[in-house]
Length: 306
Ligand SMILES: Cc1cc2nc3c(=O)[nH]c(=O)nc-3n(C[C@H](O)[C@H](O)[C@H](O)COP(=O)(O)OP(=O)(O)OC[C@H]3O[C@@H](n4cnc5c(N)ncnc54)[C@H](O)[C@@H]3O)c2cc1C
View: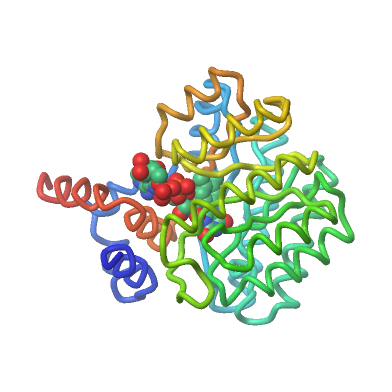
């Protein structure tokens, strides 16, 4: 879809990022999808989610850092998050992006930085999810994840797969054998047809196939989607196979389909909400706009209101 591609393209434009982050009305709108600019605001948002029987996953927003010092600052921030989880007693794990730890600069640096986080989290008994980024990073992310998984336990570190990628079903088959905890999502980046299905129908079909493979594996996985068809297919498959509600979790993004988040939690499903925070919200925010054209109207309406 043209709008989607255009918004994802704009999400990578540095000039627009500078403008948007300074433009107050635009910044105000981010509160719908972003929990705040600092850890305390994210903790407060997670407390509210926990009160509604939803667990959380912290995400400190900052993709594609420019130098090793910036990557080092990200490591420090995540170590602070892990300490905060223990100090506050909130129910949350953490999600990291390898580009945040220097993947574009040097994969070895990204590995070392990610390892420092996983080691601290494992010591504290917390889980680290390695997010999946654009397809230029897929193999490097898989390679680093496998190294981490070889060193740490099943409940220390997990990964994400995207059902729009043609390679994903094979990756899922390989990873369940490790075994590994996987979050399946549809995928949020612009990808060429050689690597990703151009039709939503194929992405959805693949999602269901991977979901069934994951649920049948006996490992605790994350089913990340706001799509009622994917959720219904998951519930129906679990019921048919006699797979209990405690055997997997649904995952959604902060501020999206809160009604459905609450409903699934009320129905006794494990529900985890991904809670992004930080000053570098621009690319994340633009990807959320790209996912749903109606969000653009929401933005325009609010900008006109001033
Ligand atoms: C917990 C979690 C973690 C994720 N991690 C990653 C990751 O590591 N890598 C990655 O590439 N992607 C990630 N994503 C994003 C994902 O790939 C999709 O882009 C996103 O979830 C939209 O797909 P969907 O399954 O909700 O289905 P869609 O078919 O896109 O949407 C179904 C319905 O959900 C609602 N909806 C979806 N998105 C929005 C929105 N932005 N605003 C309002 N309503 C919306 C609408 O009602 C829509 O009709 C993650 C998503 C979640 C929930």
